[in-house]
Image 1 (tube, rainbow, N blue to C red):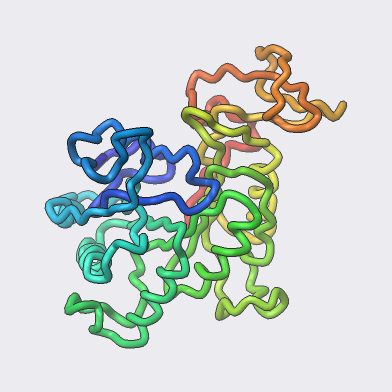
Image 2: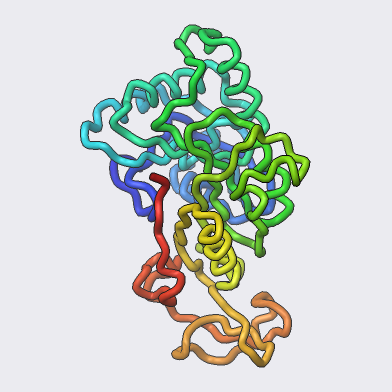
Length: 309
């Protein structure tokens, strides 16, 4: 993990925090947990269980990694804590303040933060904004950093309903959502427009600036209906919000006019796949890219990879 990344929407990853814990269904097949398990006797010792795998719930501050973005001179997009969650309950306020201080200093870069804990993010950053300088001596400022994009991960409608309003209440220059792994269609409309009054949500008039959508990959990957991506794109188009289709996942499918589920492309074979959707007839897909991230394999209308201005 470092100055290059295979994650389609970023250029590099930066992990000053290691370790995490599961909080929702989107964590079931956590890729970071699997990667950490390969270093169970190394960098992630004590952070992953030796029996059965999985996070222990402990986190660690990696002070040696803190200044890494300052040593990268060429501007790049940097995914912050791809192997953890910056707002995990065991990440101290002092650690978060130090990380924000680096992001402020490395103004040549764009930092992409994702959390499944937007309530803590909102509460902490709102308090800092209201009382500058309380960030444990690290000089927090009242205005959101223009090079820091704050985002929330949502896998389905329930998590969107819970997390996005909290994100929109958070002081930020850019607010975004990663709907990956997408486990169902999500109605994003009321967060793509300034409709907080109509929805009854107190968002201060904020709306989303970017939406990323993608299917699940890796062992145990769950199906991804291409209609979910098409819906996300259409909603973004209507609102004038950039959308990024990251990957189709290991098991993409779509519904045939007959009502059958089509899992894959014409070269696939009809197979009975109950997990693909009801009714259970589906078609398998053989991908060159096992995670479905090669845009050359996308249907033309899903070749959408846009960024906020």
